[in-house]
Length: 168
Image (cartoon, rainbow, N blue to C red):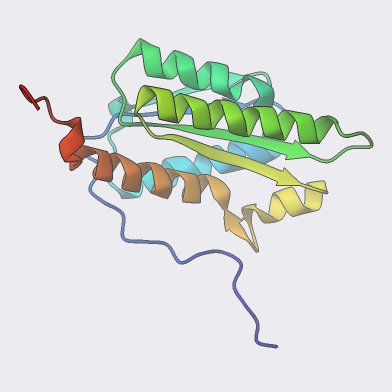
């Protein structure tokens, strides 16, 4: 069987120089989440996002990511919000409940706000798997989340339903 790279190829990033991006990052599992944050920042910078167009806030854990994203969405006009966290399986099903609630909360925010809210949460069985996804052999999921945010922000700008019209 042929070897397969687990990371998708990096797409051409749209020009992000006009985008305002928010990032909310969980403090729990900081070695992982800060590596995800660095990957996201590097990708945004590569696309031209200006430092003063980027706001980063920290929340205690992944469960609080939707709250942090909502705060970023309501505090200023943003083109996208990226949520970064790490949930590692433990001895109980606690991780399943947290991951499900976080995914649902992030999805609902994106749908109700009309602003892309990106799920950049690593969910793994072991700390080693998390490290592999935060800059290791499986790439950096923070960088992938930032690329997704840029692509969706670009699509949002060109969405004709996003334009104000009169009548029908």
